[in-house]
Image 1 (spheres, helix red, strand yellow):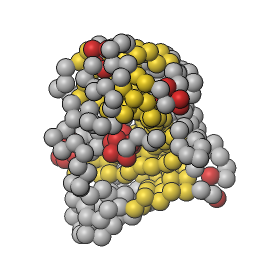
Image 2 (cartoon, helix red, strand yellow):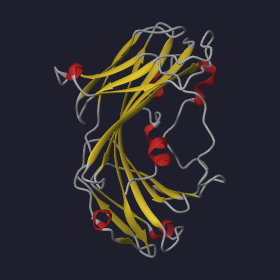
Image 3 (cartoon, rainbow, N blue to C red):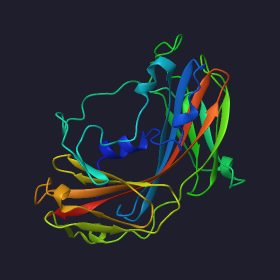
Image 4 (cartoon, helix red, strand yellow):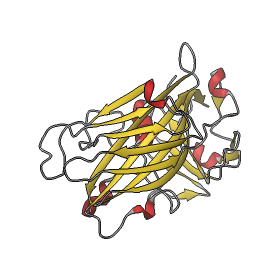
Length: 285
């Protein structure tokens, strides 16, 4: 079972979350700010076998609207328990009929510097929804985000030839390693996660400064969010798991992020790469 697209999309639209992954990119003199975010998502339980998908988004807004850029899910005002918090289901839980703001993809291309053949096979084109907050954008798509096949740990080149308001830019980012060694295997085995006991997770450390763990109640859309050291182990406290209902379906998203900066003559652009592991199929009991 795959995690609902609602949650996969929220993470794949992640923004910068700490001082070493792009937050400091913004220059006060720039007219525009942007975010180019790419993700490599692994679905170890997909049928007929494990699969990997690529996604991403390129968004540019005037500097005064920087807060409108997508952000990695955070605890915000939710009460924290250690490194985690519980986020109650939103008022519109289960209703995906509302649409978000239009996104702008400005002919951005992501290629793998570690693979000399990166430009000759397997690419994903993500086109703009149409519409734009920029002068002259009108209601027509502004271009596409083109992602060539890449692997965790590779050096990626992100570049654009510019379009309308934002000038050309180029930058590099070393993508984080994919997550391996996830245990326990309750998701693979269709097992259960007790809501009355602490739940210990382990994985193979990957050298990132931190890893984000999102525990999902797929029935109510409530979630536990944890940002922890990428040291290979973390225990989710039972006090937070108690917010879930026995019998509900559960799933996990685990994400590593890396970031850097790129600049045009009038814009600061945060570059973000993420590797996500999405697993579901367990039941809370």
